[in-house]
Length: 343
Image (cartoon, rainbow, N blue to C red):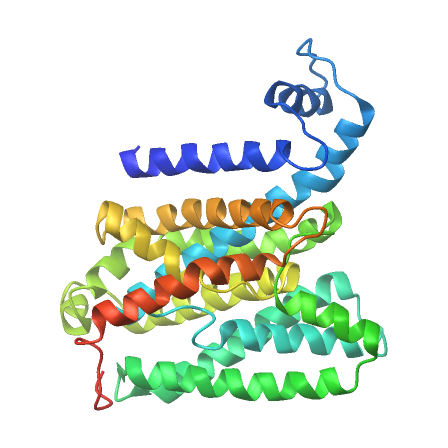
């Protein structure tokens, strides 16, 4: 295994152990291992209290699993989009995928009961369709004659975000106080209160979006040379574009349905992996998945501990990390950013 990927696996394992053990009820690593082993019928000879088992299995373990799934999916989606557009500023949130998914998920939340829809399954599917509609719209607007303008894409993403925010405002206006409070916390992202049943409903969509993306590493490497060069190498560029857009919408939509809007993970993690291991997508894609998972699980741990016994929305923590990083990217690359609407 590549040394960078090996280090990221170790980082993710360490963050997960810390997140499982730290909190109002401290659980040492040996007791964590003993509780998990007991679930599969093994006795490690380390005793534990019943409340430790309940806290670990019903509260912390679902949060960690959700953080790994959503963080990994956001990292892969960001890496694939940045590879497709050949721009490190591309991010699912910046081009409207998250806003479209959030709007569709909110519509199902408001109208799902009236339409007698099974919310557990309708929510991730609606979020996927909302994210897909947003990214297809942005992609169509930004593509002229087979060439996709990065500047137009970002501007179209801003417009889609604004329209989605306005439509969301209509739902908020019609909400009562409790619905408004719940909605505001949901839009700031969070892993709290998740159940194994919710993970079971959304995890298949996340896995279906992440696993096929790893097989796009070679075509994305070819696209780094340019569209014409990729065509000469035998890459079906249009097919690759459709797959990246569809898989990104699938993963981000399911992630938004499960954890709300969590920005900047898809922006920060691919760039950090490229700094560590270079631009090869055979490393960047799995590296972004591992680092995205570690970042989100670590952010959730900070969100639980910083203002304990209260809890910060995890999206606030990721924004505090990703916002300054995004500004650094803009300042560093400002001389290379297009100013005349070119690709």
